[in-house]
Amino acid sequence: MKVLVIGAGVLGLMSAWRLAAAGHEVSVYEKSGHFAEASSRSFAWINANNKSPAHYNVLNQLGIQAHLEMVDEIPDAENWVHQTGCIMIDFSEGAPSTYAARVASSQATDYPVENISGSKLVELEPRLGSHEFAEGALLFSSEGYLDNDLLGEFLVARLTTLGVPTHVAEVESVSSTPTGVEVSSTLGKSSFDAVVLAAGAASGALAERSGYDVQMFRTDVPSPATHSFLGLTRPVAEPVRHVIISDKINVRPRHDGRMYVQVPELEPLVADAHDTSVMKRVHAEMEQRLQEIFGDDCVLDSVIASARSLPKDGLPIVGYIDQHRKVYAQVMHSGMTLSALMSKLCVDELEGNESELLKPFRPDRFNDTDTAVGDPVFNQYFIGKQ
Image (cartoon, rainbow, N blue to C red; front, side, top):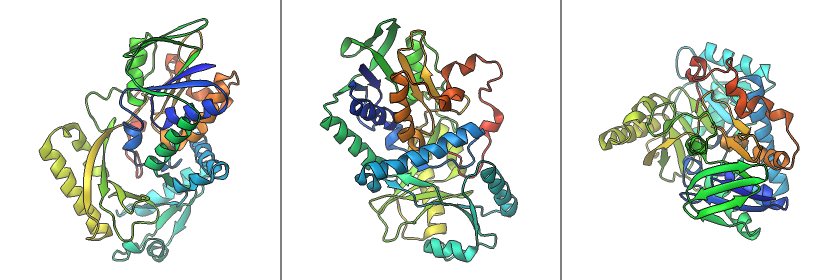
């Protein structure tokens, strides 16, 4: 099968690799370059933490497992898949109720969670030794993170070995027929047997230009729903050892001794990220919070505002968007967690083996009047929300 993958982020490159390895003739079109958009600017925490409804939680748990299976399949994968566990801390007086609610929701989906004492927390994360944690913390042992830059390098190398061409090209439209797909791009017109639409936040606009419907939030006007700040520190002698999420700050290590940083309460400022003075303020306040909790040697090197690929009900959109079943969408916010799983399912589905696992996530669900779009519950803040 001659397949075009639109998008060279984690979902596009992973699916292109799996399709090529399965014997299909694959090309990749990407307007900016490999891992040039959200995939290069992701906190890349692999988790199913507080993700609902239940079928979405299960999908993310299977996504974590698929990454771990990659380590068994490809020994080099241990370089970018890190099952460190995640520690959740609530610094507020409401910690006991926060922990109780998160434990209950985790246990309802058989998701591993453990209450740990303050002393155990400091043992696991010595950088927190200057603080007291009377209420302890929660440990989610199955979670971890991806070194997304190393994963991107691996995928590009594998595609090169398999002879998969990646073209810097912007796709203007796709049009399916009973026998294939006509693609118009800055390279001209081309024909394929199938197209995989994995263009992240740009997927909705491309679908609309092509006469199809992919219900995505627009990202041309930044907002806390569609954009977030991500800080990156300079290398430190002893980075944190786990993914750490809290009501004050989220931090996780990288392979190069640096750390990624998020500060939830700064997110409302993202609407003004174009303003240099706002970015300076975010940088200063993020660094101050980082040093208060983890030490003065943690110096922030940069802060960026990054767009999220976000379907309108917060859940993945996966499946054919055209009547001829030739244009297959893969659009989701949890792309890092789900990429290893989705790439395998993409091959299965393009080869005619429909997955029951993906039934709740089909694009046509928005035709159902009971499907909530922009549901207030989805927009509600909780510790660890990405």
